[in-house]
Length: 398
Image 1 (cartoon, rainbow, N blue to C red):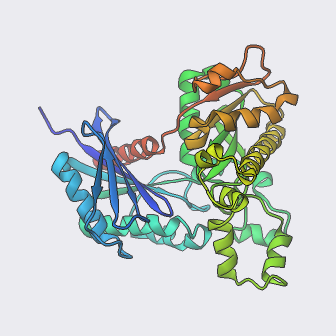
Image 2: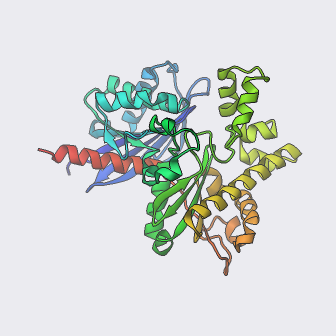
């Protein structure tokens, strides 16, 4: 029996690194293992599954700026459980592709430099992705690496949708709506095509609700509009991010409020959202279990803003055939789904309470004017598929 190639994927967050290990057979990538490194933990911890059982491993490596030690120890652990000699390529989720990248690419010096230039547009996530690429280059210099961009899926949107109502010169300089969570929306669009082809051809709003949250309007599986704009701060409130905010608030905070740019950035990215409104937690599960009125208000605001964004995106689509919930909160918290649906009852949208509580694929009630679905997302699978495609093209090009 010949070698079975392996592909490793990295999905870098601001404080964690998700990994997926995929076996490739006949051009198809199948996940055989996965892991998460929590960069906030002291000492660092690697949580892995796919080896027959889940394991929680304490890492000896220090979280240095270049991440060399962390990845070296992590790859060493994977090598002791999988045949990493068969590793042929590594794929990365890169949050921002700007207007330069409209699809996955093989990483070379030029593409890596272009990604690094986009760090100011995504200061929370882009540096982590660039560091991981550089670390793999250091540890496995001959290994093919590929990048999949969270913004690329939204390049189908028109300039009208992407434009802010500020002087046109800024649009030409790159100040425009980019949209994010594109890998998640790409996966969900594929699942709709596979499982609900009639709905996929229609007008669909997908709500990606996790610690980061956004919504996307799809028509025939193609992105038409989305809630996140120039940065990952925009749109609905998130775990610790504010969502849409009156620019006058920023002027006030940095003027009469006396806050510095760094202080405002920290406030908007790390101390707002569910955490800011509740005053004690960014975790929607903890808020749901709490009796504190601030917790109730944080979740109520979350649901209200999500429903409002669904209505706005339905306007962009000129109608609404289906609403899809996905990602951690969207897939696992029926109370949030129910609260959003209550705000949209005026559309004729109705949930089946039992189906919702059971996390069924279809949770709308019979006769609901809008079909409501729960579709688990899988960004790592999209990265793996992209990487396999790039590896195949490179290995077959004369």
